[in-house]
Amino acid sequence: MLISKTDDELEKEIKEIQEKVSTLENRLKELENGQVQVSQELKIKVDEDLDKMNGYWKSRKKIFKNIWDTITENLPGSKKEFMEELGIEED
Image 1 (tube, helix red, strand yellow):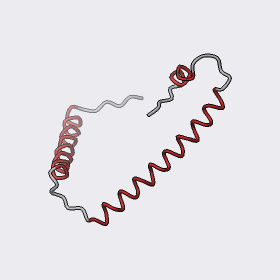
Image 2 (cartoon, rainbow, N blue to C red):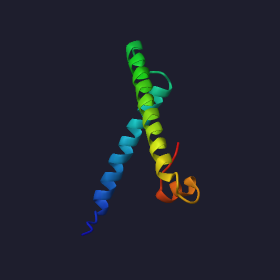
Image 3 (cartoon, rainbow, N blue to C red):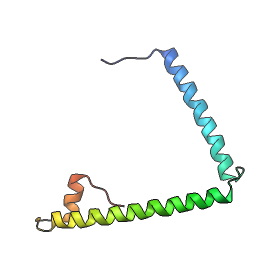
Image 4 (cartoon, rainbow, N blue to C red):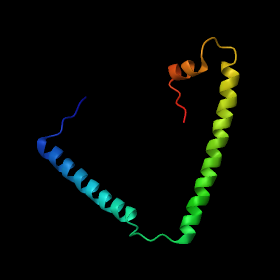
């Protein structure tokens, strides 16, 4: 069952979204201009977390590649075409 909103409801929703966008744009400008101070400890923690997550990503990518190579080892045709057919995206 499709529920239609009235014009007033849509206008209210649009106004709320525009206000949210404005708030987020202001926050982004503050971040881009360096107006927000971040402690050195937080920067170090974020960098460490990023390195950790990149390690997980590389590990999972390697595991996928090993499994993918095993599965597609004897398939006729291109592995790349098969990957596209299945909708698997690479980085």
